[in-house]
Length: 335
Image 1 (cartoon, rainbow, N blue to C red):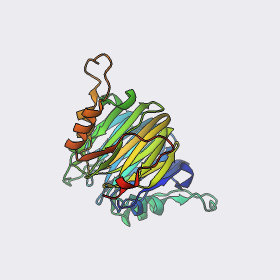
Image 2 (spheres, rainbow, N blue to C red):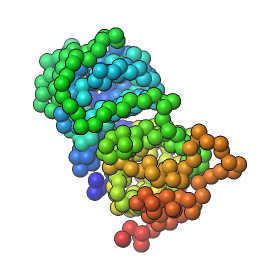
Image 3 (cartoon, one colour):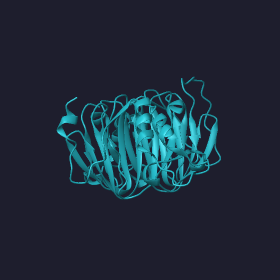
């Protein structure tokens, strides 16, 4: 991901999807050097995928709101807000939305956008009378984009059809109350949704909650991972190289490795962050505090701990946090 990129909610491509729901293409492969794609879907209760598997990419679901049943191999899971599913390529899976949902989906590498565009409808174009996604159109889009449809959508008590393939990674599904949580800058919370052990090192996934207005990172550079941030609520200023972006709900920013960056929260915020490849959790764990442990009086993330954790995790802190009107100094951009 050699080029910084940012977009507001209004910039995203919109596709009509299953059950009349809408899907936003937050990022496709052209913005990530093909490493991943990211989507956000408003899904009505009853919307359901066919039983299928991917041959080219891993798929990840994060349920931001609502509830769903996820079938993965021989197992069936019920998830509500905060739940996550990592579905490696080659693993049969399906889902059914059981309460109106806000669903974030990722694929690594990118490519899943071809399927969604092939079966869905560009919402900017006139809607043909009676248009809908049919098993035929979905099957054609799946076949053209490396997917195998194994059967129709499942009823709530069904099980997936048997499949004899052998995936190279195990799936991982977790509820919100099963995530590791770390106290972080300004008293915010980092929820470790997926770490490198869950994904075979392909990516890590974090959800930050309770980030107060005014909390800010130092200026730093990541040497090993690209970082992508989605603003779920609140707002923030993100500096990436010589760019400064203002993110509001639905906005996204791409921070390539090797590019100096910083951020400052401007209204109490919740964000979702992806790093690729995985491993950034080592930084958060080294400087943060496991909330399962007793909290020492006056605990905070001290700057020296942040510096040590950064160095150990392949980051370099370059300068103190920036004020809202500042830019990253030019001398830090020439490295």
